[in-house]
Image (cartoon, rainbow, N blue to C red; front, side, top):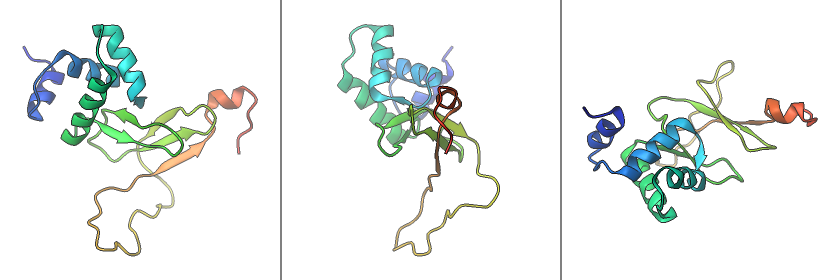
Length: 143
């Protein structure tokens, strides 16, 4: 019986392979992982897998819509499997931890540009920057 991961790969027109399944598993367990962290975890599960192979799998997944790539300023790209909703991210300025936030509440941020310059807008990203609870308890003051 195929798993949800296998069905997702086939539904995206992709072959089911061990590295692809392992990448999906790692991202399910470690959302917002960097490519290097994904590669390390996949190698721990499967043995020898090149970093380039992991980068290739991630690129294919992003193109297929199975994975979302986020790029917080000053941080390496991170990857997550949560793609089918309009969620945003919180990023700690101290440790770089990334957390999901379901939706923006309160005063609505500017999600439509005053001039689209001929672009067809597909997505607006909202990133909240601050200091996470762990870093604050280590003596770093909240701003």
